[in-house]
Structures are given as C-alpha cells and as structure tokens.
Length: 336
Image (cartoon, rainbow, N blue to C red; front, side):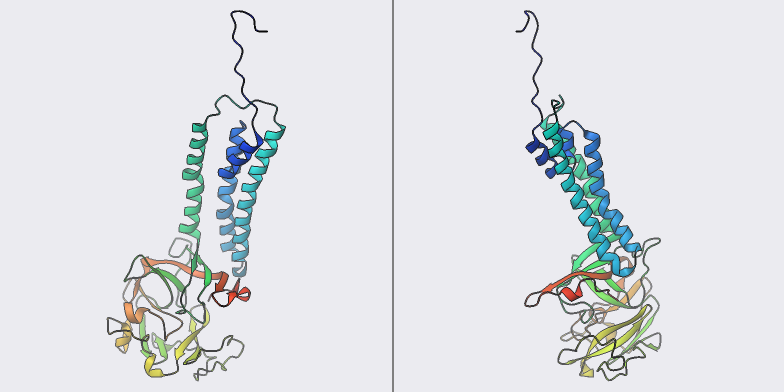
C-alpha cells in the first residue's frame, strides 16, 4: 500500500537477453551498452576494429608465404570477438538482476551505432585498404602464366610510401588504367624512369641487357630449366623466362615472332613498340603483361605514372574459375 501524499517509484523492466543479443549482433558492444556497461561495450568494439589492421601488419612483416594465413587469422579473430560480444551480452542479461539504466533510450543506441561505425569500424577498414593490403580479382588471362583468370590476390598498398615497398623491375604493379581512370589493371614493371627499352620480336632488352634468364635456352620449350617450367604453353604460344631485379619469372610469347611486338589487334598508337628503342620518361614506368600475345599494356597505352601505381601483388589467397571450380593448389601461391 502506498502512503497518502507520496508517489510510487517508476518501475524499469529488467534487461531482456534477446534484446542484448540483437544489439551486439547489430554493432559490437551495443548489447553491453544496453545492459548499462558502456566501458565493456567500447572494449569489444575497439577489439573488433583493431584485429584486422594488427594482423595485416604482422602478415606483411612475416615471411611472404605466411601473409594470407596471418591476414585470415586476423579476420577470424575479428569475427570471433564480434560473436563473443553477442554471446557475452546474452549471458550477462540472463544473469542480471539489476534494472536497466534510466538513460536507456533508442536515441542513445542509434548514436552509439552511428559513432561506432563512422569513427571506429569504417576508419579501420579504410586504413587497411588504403595503406596496408587490398584484395583484387583478376578476370582475364593477360598475366598468364603468373596469374590465372579467377585468381584472388593480395596486394601490398605500402608501395611508394615511406618505409614501404619501392617499385622494382619485375614488380607486379596494380595501377590506374591511363585510358579509363575508373579501371584498375595489373601488369609487370619492365622499365623504370630513365631506362631504355628495346623490343626486337620476342627479345626484350632493358638498358642494353637481355631480360631473358640465363636458364632459358631461347627455344621457348622451357627445357632451359625444367624445374621452373611449371606449365605447358597454350597452342600458339611458347614459354620463356625473364629476369627482373628480384629474380626470374615466366612469360608467354607468340610462336610467330612477327606477332611478338604488340598484342593482337593493337592499332598504331604512341606505343613504344612502334620504334626500335624507347626511353622511359621521368616519373613513369613501362609495363607489360606476362601473356605478351594477349595483354593490353604499354605497347598500346604508353607508360604509366608512378603516382598511379596503387599496390604490388604479393600472393594468391583464393582461386576459382567457371568450369574448373576451386583451384586448391593455387591458394597461397607467391606472385613474383
């Protein structure tokens, strides 16, 4: 019985486990906020946000073959913390005997979600994609035999930054396509600023030095070094080896040497292949596709500004193609 002249205290319902679970599934830590523990919720949110950037940095510093594994572990850790926050909120709500705080309002939850996304989760994702590592899907065969259609690759975004990757001859550069700045291409860097490029049929020289690997006997059958010949050349093409600043790589040249100077169907243009030699301008690089018979590259669109190079490809993290299914053997393949 309530005494005359007094008011009964407002009754606030106890927190509901389902609502706590739903809150944390919508945004890490929101369930804890609903339970009146904003500090615990903020810790869950921050843990989810930093898991991938920390793992990505560790992966880039680890031995090259571990990059995709460490990065995947970071993603798994972020997902695990996210699910942990939901389970934690559900359990805490079930054990709670304390009424929900008086400031529990939909507006507070919406503000937390908006701030958490705009100031924590989105910047974390943008930082990784803009400064550390980004994934790309390669749809064409212009980079065969190194990269196959359907390969999903990890590319190092530290290129050109202080303490990051510097472009080298032989690097697999991801860059903005000069003729359509909404498109991104991947090609191999052949010449750096100031280099003289000579293309004489299937022979490629940089600063007067033949790029053909010493292990390549020049007949295109790949028996110059049988250990490196890992594929069979498609009909009409022959496998060859070239050498960059950081080692050898495989390329495909047309069997018909008359077609080796430019990709099939390439119209006359400012292509350096139209002359016997070409000096790469300052601030530019000369790029070629590894499949020299089918690649649209510097022979057609000219050199590429260094500032337009977005990343350097490092590793295949997944590969599949229609008609072949998942190429399990390519997962983890290093790109060089």
